[in-house]
Length: 293
Length: 282
Image 1 (cartoon, each protein chain N blue to C red):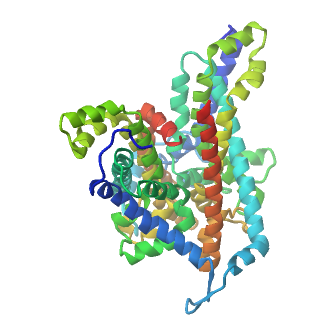
Image 2 (cartoon, rainbow over the protein chains, first blue to last red):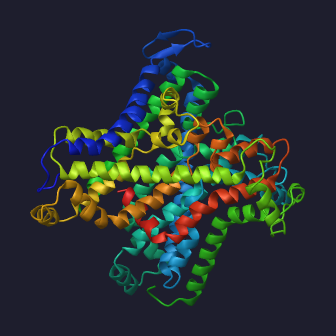
């Protein structure tokens, strides 16, 4: 951690860490502690009086069936986004790994959705699936399927899953391709000499060998779906219809800024913080292990 | 490729091309949408081939005053986005590199305490502390300013970690010989550490530029003045007004202009981008 050879203590190192530490204290530590403090308060509707109520906000959430539903919905949403984007990325990476010439061209063509902001991704998918003029509802009508995500909650959920997964395919593809390209060719060749075809090699060799990457991506994608998809939901559904796409991050924003339930929103923030800490711990635990071999 | 299977090779390319088309379709539709007249974009089915109104739409979007004449022209929003993205990327790199330098090259009381404090910011994404952070910024009078848009976002645990990692791989002999030659800490930093971590800085910059350009929730809360809106957040306002009078050609042109700079950065600096991605997530 520290260099064997280093400079002696003086005022300088404090000056060097000062900007980062001051910003951390003012914009991270203080707001986070305020969130924890506010989660113990109930404010009346006019903001005139506040009451310290210990864990009442949490108790309320614990018994709130809307919050339970949002929790389960967020879990489903993250798993669906992770599964969809990772499996598409895995298949594309397996194919790109096969081609000798052009793998990098395909990489260039596949990575740029990463650069599209979530809210823009939401706007594009909203346009494509717009019930009145969108191209997909128009095509779906031919096979007799009626698309209107403004009315149908399952379709709305499907749409935000597709938009979120589309944006994340690029990222997953990059990591899978790198993982596959680092597998020693001799292993694959040995299997081929023993008579294993491409499909068999994929299932019995490549897939197990990239499993550390799969686990890493699972965590990253879960974090992405939990926290970075606010823009997609805000652009496409605003949590509707009838709350069917209200994921946890959106609910914090909605209850706090629109509903002005400060205590309840703060309590939800605290629960989210605990979730992030757990996810970060899993991520780091995994890297500690990976470093060893 | 291990064995010769021409049929499989053809299939491989077909699948990859299908994959590329699938990924590119939303962008293509956006581009096509930005090249037609507003009326054409209201008829079913919407066109799949570009029209001839690209320059007209570009002019009215880039220099016009929004679909209802009440928002800032898009060039102003793009300028705001650029300033914000550069300030976030530059600021994060600057404060992270000096704190990593202090933590790796100095022995001083509370060194590890500072390190853990920076580490914890990783666990506090802006989404989980929006209300109290908003209050702090409001109390400091930073609403509707570039400072308010950037400073609360520029503490960075990941960048600090990455620079720490880079510094740890630099041989100790560098510092020893620099000290024998009589260089002080800042001289060592400017003349040896900075040049040695040049590619890492560039890679980090690519990732952070995109991060800054694509910020959405924070600018949405912190700006009320239309002169301070960023282009990414303007899309949402346009979508809202689209429910009464949809001008999809203008919306799609704005969306296109909003994503060209970050896409350009990713594609043009692909090597640095990939390096930055794989480094920051370690």
